Length: 88
View 1 (cartoon, rainbow, N blue to C red):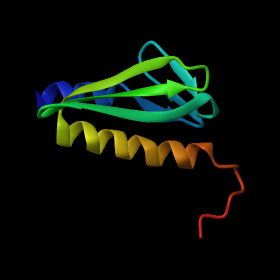
View 2 (view 1 turned 60 degrees about the vertical axis):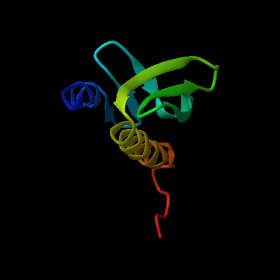
View 3 (view 1 turned 30 degrees about the vertical axis):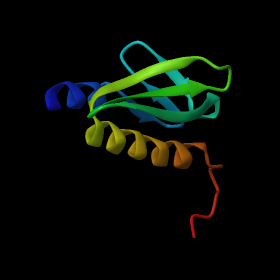
View 4 (view 1 turned 180 degrees about the vertical axis):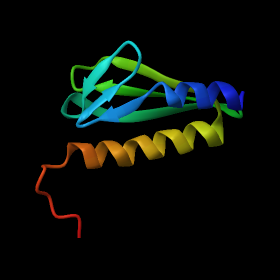
């Protein structure tokens, strides 16, 4: 299960202000949020676009999925900031 989570995570990356996978490119400004659903000890995470489209990210162990979603949410906030934003 951990290998599946790691493989899925390595498939997504930010390049500039764009989230990319092997098959998709999503501008950070078009992403409304990162969401997580839980079922027992497993969970799944997805991105929802401003247009309402859901894009699957990862499914697996609850702790791993939560960590991935939290990390992506933080990175998304940074990627969505104006270029000259003050981080202090």
